[in-house]
Length: 156
Length: 71
Image 1 (cartoon, rainbow over the protein chains, first blue to last red):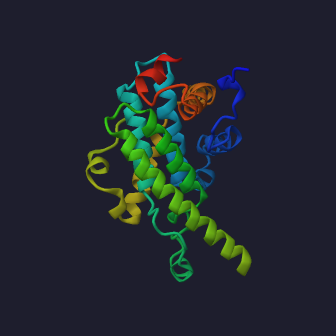
Image 2: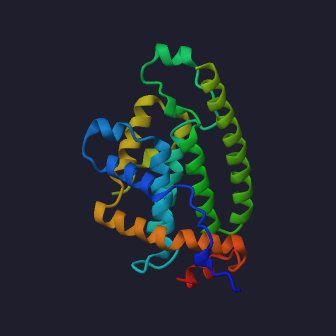
């Protein structure tokens, strides 16, 4: 029996319901709600827009708009340091503006995965090599984040 | 709306908190209108996800041109 693509479980790092929640928070118009959106979640939205623009009939593939969405996604994830996994509670106590979102978290992993998927679909020469590097980083971060979450739950 | 030149020139990793918030606000304001965003999100979940599956299962080569021609 021939296996069809439609029969396979789709690889989807960010489920639709989750993205809808992020989008409704961004477009809510309330400053407080918008503040709750992590920069990594903004990166997810831009990466998805870039990939969708690639498939859109409105513009040719690899259009300026698609490249711009991808670039904004890259900037959004760079607004926070993704290499710090465990939050420093002393600094958090001293500086109220220092939030958990400035550390690698589950959202960071999701955003990096989407960035890797976008790079895979992009026409940039050498993107396959870039994806290997990005996925390596993502996997290591995912291991560290899960370890930290496990430890926190154990301590709590 | 385009981002201002500072944002493009400066690496955001080395930004002050004030600048960081400013750039975040710029990124938020550069999102497309809600209707267009919903259209693109629908498109992503309808097509991009299945194309990635096709890449993983080898029914498409990892050449981006082929991915687009499959739509």
